[in-house]
Image 1 (cartoon, helix red, strand yellow):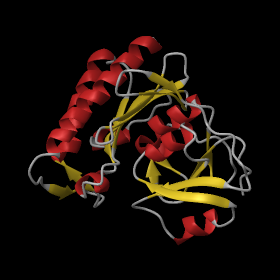
Image 2 (cartoon, rainbow, N blue to C red):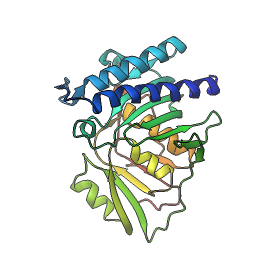
Image 3 (spheres, one colour):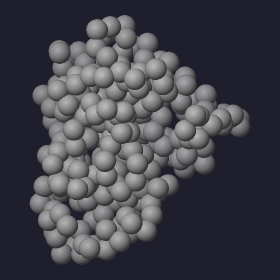
Length: 257
């Protein structure tokens, strides 16, 4: 895989998808439908998915493509693949809360090596470079290197889900000495850890690999970790059914409970 070519493509597709999403987001009321699993979907999800999928299939016709919005792809099995959530945080999008993202990742042998996370309503663009390091591209085109913070285990910064936070998550966070806690939607939580804005992101609810692969790649490229909740081994990809166990994303210096 030519990572220079790959990253240029992922970045371009994410930006183009974000533009299409904002057209719907900033327009008149849009239709919200329920998918088979009762989760919501809008025309923005579908338009972004069509755009990204066409671009990826044209460039990499022989690489399996897994995408949330194409149920047929969920039956595939692969260890090396491209994986897409064209609009992560649809609930945030519907409520016009702004922290939804476009997520595209390349997974090789079960490891999310490269990825892009774009939050179009916030104008924040995070991605791994060809060399595997992660950056945030600022509005003027400047690339800001991302690096996890050196955490103080006596005063941790924690980020948790905005739409899926529950008592189990609060109980787990309560095991730590927390300086401050914030909520964020979608895969932005990975990026907040990657940028040093948070030290710890626990997720005790259900997620799918397309929800996490791009953010996980950005976090790894910033020196961070994403591990299983049960045994603290690295979260692996290409699992049957594409669903994740509970996990913890963090800076390496956090003493996990």
